[in-house]
Image (tube, rainbow, N blue to C red; front, side, top):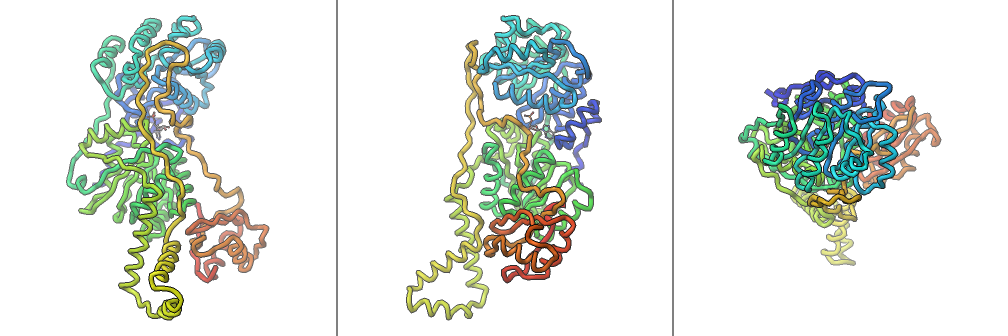
Length: 568
Ligand code: AMP
């Protein structure tokens, strides 16, 4: 049995969410609830209190945000908030507010983030205008309560997010003072990555008969596990694609499966990696069976090296030559990690499981290690020097193969004539250099900065501006995949040509080949991008098939090219 069938697919609609919310999630590319969402949302919609053990990266924000949004009726609402979400840091306050806006797009939700470091006057104005949800750091919430600029009488829900962090930061007293201002009838939700005694004490005092949710993994530490090397890299979000490229260069996988969380992330990463010269294909739930089959065909035929997929789309896939599974984000549960990683190390083969984690997600990595009892070794992103050494290794291997396996006599005359002028070492060096640049990809000249985990600020003072950010690298717009600018414009088709700079291809060669062999003229041809190993060219949609067949039947710079549509 494929291990993926062990999962129980549930949809957001199954959880009882309103259609506006389900639609908003679909438009964000969320294909299914994460385990914490599937477990927590029905409980919260039913009105129970909840004690959830979940770290950042599990999707816990949506787990508590969606049931709050579910409570908001369309139309006129009172000036006072119905929900208060307490978070340890300014960054998290901004992130949670943005998540509420994204999920509650169709509802006109009024969210006011309240944190230190921002002029209090601006927050006062927003609070006066009326708010549905307040997302606050405890210190600043207390400031507003004292000024009577925040009233909590109408609260229906209080959420403590990352409660263990808030306690570590010395907010225990502030939390008590805030609870004292809230109605006893409220629903109380507590999320914490760890459940030390102090959290338990808060839960006993402030939560009423709470549901306890902890996502426990069923892990079989089987033989396959032993054959898989697990490693992780800490990298800031903005450097992830570059880091992935470096890692792929050093690892040289025969075939790799890269997991992303959303459809948008899959599309965007596929484009980015193609732009960087890796032959990548996207696979997600929005594609038809026919499109999926074509992608799989290309992977099997070896015309693609990288499959970028969502969990849903990758279910049931069986790719036997898969050597690497890569988590482009930390998976949202240990189970997900285990299922993804189960795709390598099959049938006695060795495999590699790689995870890219942002510094804020390091706790989830620890949880995965702990539950799976599988050491994940933290690696350093390959440096420019590492890459150079690796590329030289590949060149040496290629030359060795050529010396052992090929009849090189035809080249003897070149060496002999050069030997009259230079010594053999010099000739060899020049030949190696040529071979190296013909084989290698683009050379990166800059190292990717190392990401580190910064310690939480432990400042229990109550002054304005003291809510210090814990990890300044949080992306202010989580989950928003940036679209690369390379999408072809409407009415045109983007074609992929498997020749690039390394084959000496220049834009004018493509223009020449297209205008020479088809009915198109130069002005019909759109943007042209030449990368190391391939090129992309935009042509009018109506002429795409003609261009493809014409280019396939001709030679460009003396070589026969593979030409296909870049996207379907
Ligand atoms: P969190 O653990 O709440 O910080 O969420 C981690 C990331 O997962 C965020 O970037 C969310 O946008 C994303 N996310 C949350 N739920 C889902 C889901 N059901 N499918 C895909 N991505 C999700």
